[in-house]
Image 1 (cartoon, rainbow, N blue to C red):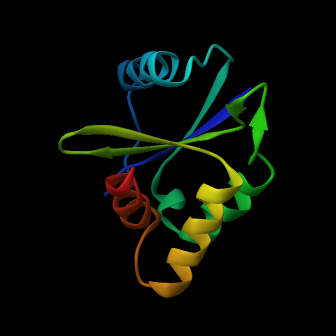
Image 2: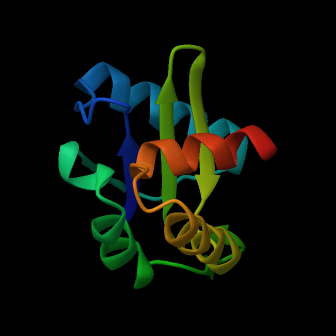
Image 3: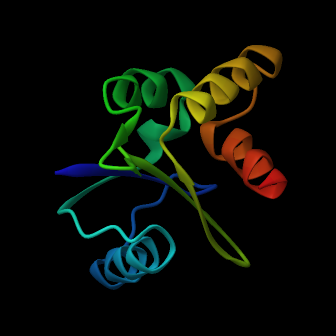
Length: 113
């Protein structure tokens, strides 16, 4: 199962319908057909928890990311693939801005993509 780390500003969890929408977006944008494991909640807004959880899943498997980061915001859902480069940028940004939540860091990253 491939993890999808769902980040919301308030650390909320997605409903079943929200997860189904996310699955559809991953298939559409990344061609993802693997079984997915949705990780969510306030605990993920602590950057160290994202780093610990995602480090083992980073990289490409059959040309697709080993995990995904879904950033929910008022205009939709942005998705960032779990590549080494993306996680390295996240780690760098959390060191430069230690008071920001994971959601805030990834939200700013998603604006650049």
